[in-house]
Image 1 (cartoon, rainbow, N blue to C red):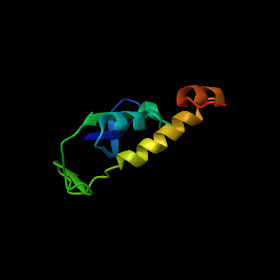
Image 2: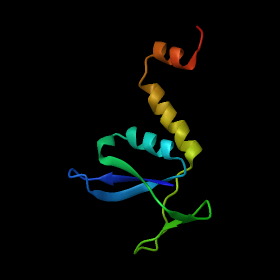
Image 3: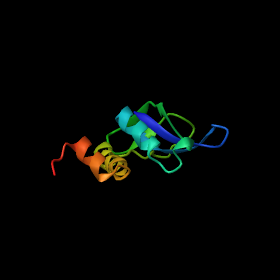
Image 4: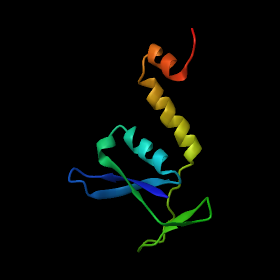
Length: 96
């Protein structure tokens, strides 16, 4: 799994946003955040049953596991919203 986490101005880890099964979706998620410069990704070893997950550290709190498919749809919508109608037509191969 891949963890997305927030950093401070010095690049130090502040808090975990959540975990993704797919590394590419995690990286795209981090890049489309409003404060994307403060988001990073790292691979993580997670013990999970697919719904609830835990990482091996001092805490025993469950972690947030994102639904990759739902987040991928949201990411795609954010990316497409930044394009003009003409650019969307080119990318999506839509004919007028």
